[in-house]
Image 1 (cartoon, rainbow, N blue to C red):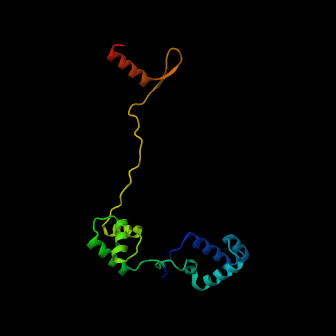
Image 2: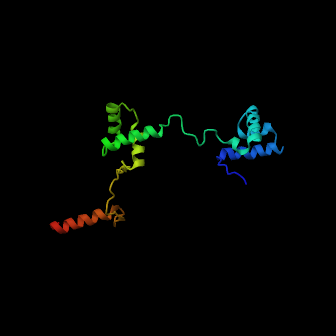
Image 3: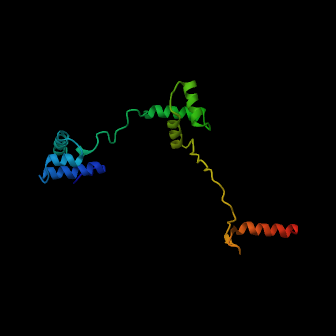
Amino acid sequence: MREVITMTLKAQKRAKILEMVKNKKIKQKDAAIILGICRRQLIRIFKEYLSKGDEALNHKLIGKPGNHRISSDIKEKIMQIVRNNYKGFKPTFIAEKLYEEHHIKIGASTLRLWMMETGLWKKIRKLRNTVPEGREKSILEKDSNGRQHSRLVWDRQRSLSDEYGG
């Protein structure tokens, strides 16, 4: 049974070209040009491809946590403090208070994400500034003299003159 390997498009392209090199359909020099790498780099990748297969083409850090990731036990400790002491406050204020009161330095954006995960904070949608459109649209018409004027303006003038006897 074959193992399923998730690959990026770049890795898939490399796999196709390295398979062609393996089957001697293209030369290593040409494959290096196609992939945009030097021949020495291609030889290194090709050796690893021959020994490990398609898995060798994936980045080695895929699936591993980042170097700057805050551990889950520290995250739980911080969220416990937030739940107990600062429920209902905004993330920026909480981040400042965590630093002042508890000597825990954490970014407000990180705290905001954690609070959204646990349901303590809801994403606030910004309202767009919209210019209200006029409800009445004017129609351009030509009068008997050939001048263009707005029908809306003419109708308003007519209604005003009817009201005030003009």
